[in-house]
Length: 189
Image 1 (cartoon, rainbow, N blue to C red):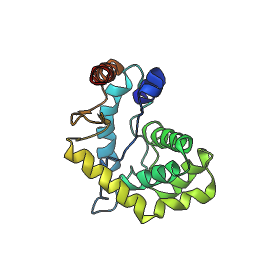
Image 2: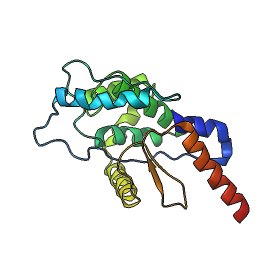
Image 3: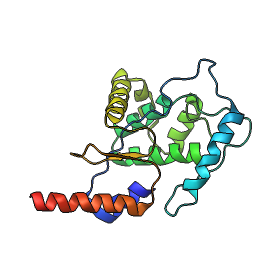
Image 4: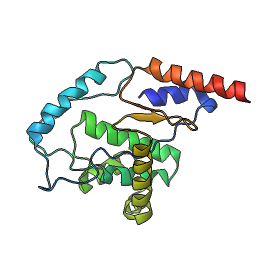
């Protein structure tokens, strides 16, 4: 992923903090989403998938239902973050792969439990996803992102900068943005 690459390239000069943005804050009234409509939507994943440094994307296949809403995977990611940055990184990567390249319903509790186990995280930590404080944190982060202008994912914002970049831009766009911010910080110091 591009932001992981930025972290590697810039080391301690850049600290990436992954925060919640809910593409689908609530499940649909019907309880399930139409797999055929979702399959058509996932055709749009092919454009970012063709870019260098992109993750692996696959158009939704099969008749399995797509995720109903965004909160469940976010609660699992926040529960893993409580175990430390490495645990968060493992579950974050696992959830992205499950959704974008394996076409698994990451709003389903059984799928989330399987992803947790596949990320080799301690079984007892999975229950933390039910902590109401985690849900409050997710909602607060989402509302903050919306207030700053985020309209989709990925979305990025630099500390001290109200501008938000939304979309799967080439790595060079993010590099230029970071370079300018680092240069500005150096002249202000």
